[in-house]
Image (cartoon, rainbow over all chains, first blue to last red; front, side, top):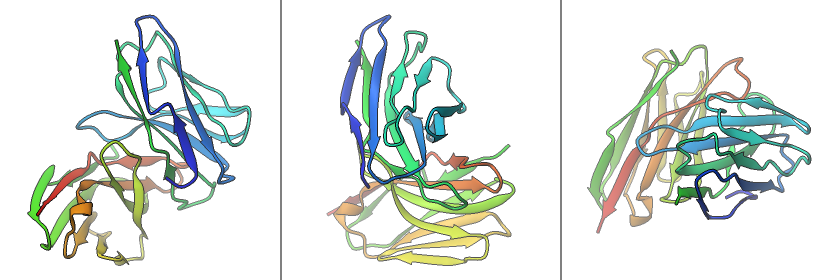
Length: 113
Length: 113
């Protein structure tokens, strides 16, 4: 999984609860991303960050929040506003520049109790 | 609308046989196309990347082709092994869209002994 770690592997969320998914990379990559994967659908971009202390909304940012306080860390919080959070969440990173391959972490599966 | 479509949705083959997966895209302006392999419950791993000028790219038993005129790509797997069982995802990048990737829904390949 190319130096990107995600934790936990499985996460359970109760109604009204916020949960935070961890993503850490030791590849010295500038950019980091969060994707959501649902059965039968392609990966969808939630948020991305190209530099510390800056991040941009992706296609489905509603109900999620992120921070980028350190280059190697990009945690994702799934808030209670996200009404359908059950999915497989993937973190990725790469260097900036054209054609740079994104490397993915092993993923976190979030389930709602 | 930028889209990536893959076929077939799923495929079952016997160990040792060859197979070909298809990807059609309508992404413009085209920058590059990647094929990823995703094992169940894991993050995707890059197999190949091709730019506009490349027609073929190989990675071991995996050979990807690209026809930029017809906007089609294929991934050919030779002498399949049980470990090839996975989802194969076609990903297209639009030139000028910073790190914006458009993901296909994937082809689920099952290799049976």
